[in-house]
Amino acid sequence: MMATANVNGAEIYYEESGSGPPIILSAGGLQGVASSYQPVIEGLSQEHRVVVYDRRFGGQSRSPMVVQTWDMVCDDVFGLMDTLGIERAYLGGGSFGAAISLGCAVRRPERVRAIFPSNIAGGVICDAYLAAKLFKSMDWAENHGIAAIVDAFDTDDRFSPFSPELAQTDADYRKNLESMNTEDFIQVMRDTIYALFDGPYLTLGMTEKALKSVAVPAMVMPGNNDVHPRGLAQAVHRLVPNCRWAEVRPHSEEPEKYTKRVLGFLAEVEADGTG
Image (cartoon, rainbow, N blue to C red; front, side, top):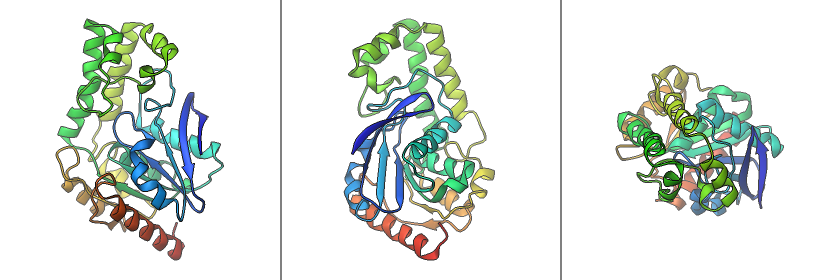
């Protein structure tokens, strides 16, 4: 099923399938699109109700141009859960989405049955990579205009400037975005950089103290590149109390192995009655 939900001033596009204990998956990148989880939805939905969603600036979701914060991206998950009548859920996510699942567990543990973050992101190279996209949007807005930023959008989320994906397909949305005061747009980009990266974070959005405070069952799966250093996943595994480790590559690379291990972990949590 495909639908939209009004969440915290945004129109969030989501898809759901299957039945059973609910799973919500948060995608990576500054946008985060539901389709990135397509390889594992069918397998996971054999035993669970699986919800994937486009984050407020990704895919078919619609949001005013506002500052992204860690509180906001977590509140969007809880708002979507409220709309769907989900009191508690299992939360997964890769890269930026891993930070969301961890952040939700810290902020509202009573709403989270367990988490299984993967492809853990963070560190100076990760921060530089993501912040550079936002800074490039600031620079281009000042020197070339907002239209140039929209034209440079890259669906592969490589080194293009940041802009809402909906501006690629919705003429009215693009018109409204391009009519935004340039200085206001630049300030949103600037404030987003500070909100997401200016903190004592060990991994994206998570301090060592926050990681130690996670009180729900957890399983971490590592990344293996400069943006997703294996050592960061090892640190999360060490700091999060009673955290399990799964030697599984990102879901896009090993979907069957990812699905099998996640289902196994969630079955363990269900059997233990800890979630």
